Image (cartoon, rainbow, N blue to C red; front, side, top):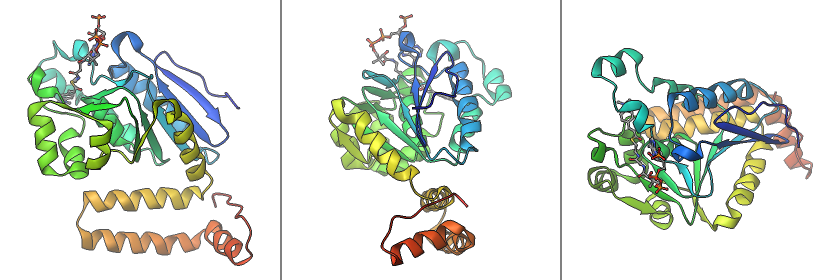
Length: 262
Ligand code: DAK
């Protein structure tokens, strides 16, 4: 274990070789995503994102709550003028623009911005205790950190409308059936299984992993024709890396590849 990185008030960091685990830690507010927490998270991850020795991020909360949404106490008194002038929550783009893959490991509540945070990650794994929902209409607003867009892309219009318009929560099994999460895992094994996946991802060539996730994102964000062309061009580009030579040569020589990120 290597603990070079400082913990901040709301963000606890653990490093195991190439995998960085980030635990949101604001238990008194059920990990509500205040601006301070958002900035700590993004500021902590940004330099790690640039570090070639870091291959994957795991984002998690506590065993009872991933995050209970945007901070209602912080938002309650804001005026239209304020949220517009601040471009309130534009700072989350600093999280989505990280290029290192991110896995959300969700136990307990992932509501509002918490559900949106899970969807901002490349993969979400749910413990059996996980509960997902977008209850913003109950507060007189709508999902504001990508919920209407990403949820619809992941689960389709029917389920997205059901969740957003009723504000109900869905359990882990429904979330997996609907395509919101990739796996449902017993609570006791959530972190071990997530770590194993992160180690697997981090062992690959980082440029190739970054290229793969960007291409998959294109499938949701653009049209099919554009996505296919983008994928092919990025695929071509990987033939400029040493890792492509090494990965294919290792296969031919029946040995494990030694990726260097170059
Ligand atoms: N914000 C602030 N504080 C919160 C909070 C939140 N989202 N969730 C919980 N807390 C605080 C509670 O107020 C309470 O504080 P104290 O009373 O002790 O001072 C403390 O955490 C413990 O809460 P509970 O007593 O309620 O704890 P329980 O374990 O019994 O229940 C719960 C946990 C997660 C089921 C419950 O706390 C809950 O329902 N929380 C609210 C969930 C929610 O409504 N989330 C959606 C938030 S809105 C935007 C537009 C909209 C948005 C964002 C941006 N733009 C235009 C840019 C909206 C986004 C949202 O996410």
